[in-house]
Length: 425
Ligand code: ATP
Ligand code: MG
Image (cartoon, rainbow, N blue to C red; front, side, top):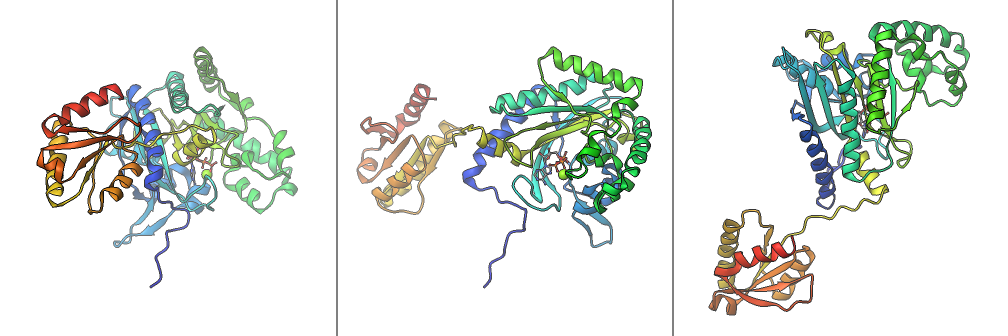
């Protein structure tokens, strides 16, 4: 029979990789919780409408990357391509922004039907942070500083911060008109794709990768000349705060982001170690979105990081994550030893609830079981055979040093393991 194939662009994360994922997730979750952000879990599926109205119907994500389908009732649903829209929807559903502020984080898979390549998948994982109800630039600075702290905690050194301000929705609209006029004067240089962008989402022309267009973009009118006074002030204060804590950045006036809901601050952490897929974390303010989705005007800001890219960057930077190994592997040979070994493992787990103990299952000779014990990475083998059972002991065999093996009575084993742990935590 033919085997069922995995879906292109959707990856299995295997046991030998998952410890790196856990390392990354634990470190990031730690930083988020340290800053008072609390986890929210939103569904993987939402109304297609939610994404069309928030991310924008004309964006690449909504117009060609979403997994959209009809459910059995004929409702149009989509797999979430990102989670900001879902978080805002949940905040509205449950009144989370009613007379209160929120600092939230989420983690989970996102889905985009893009062309799969290194660092670009159709199911990928994001961890994101969102803050609702904070108007001032201090929350922008906090979110950015928090991400910088994550890189430090993970051991990442090659991440650079790009920063820009898009101004208010009105300022952006005014700039959009200027931009449309400018690019219209250079229509000859625009290919079909660019012409479509010009019509639907002209700001996106600024981050076009077409080399033909590069010189045109280089001298295009800059958004900064059209910023409203308040956004200009907000941006200046954000920069001061970042300067105060020594976070370096580059102001990139071409940074516009691919989603419609952003206003004012936008930023992206990029790296020169991952080739074309160089963005590891991006975000910005979306002050108009809550209202746009039917809530009261509520300032909001957030970012999302790509876990696969972060993990690839860790590898590029040579950050070595040691997999967690068991403390002990219990070898048991013979019928009596098998039974006693199971009971002993339960006793040890009762006495040391967090012990990492692998109980050998499936029989086999001492030799083959010890081989498995060694391969498991365990510090010790606990060996039970007929002799040990007869005198109610286990042989403790260090597997990572050449210390001699020695018998330990069952009754003393938990304490012995505790002592050994203290000497080598
Ligand atoms: P890119 O410019 O690389 O397409 P993006 O602007 O579409 O990124 P966002 O929507 O802001 O990305 O998502 C935040 C982060 O999620 C990105 O910085 C990136 O690290 C990661 N990411 C986005 N799309 C993918 C994907 N298809 N596969 C893996 N990671 C992704
Ligand atoms: Mg993209």
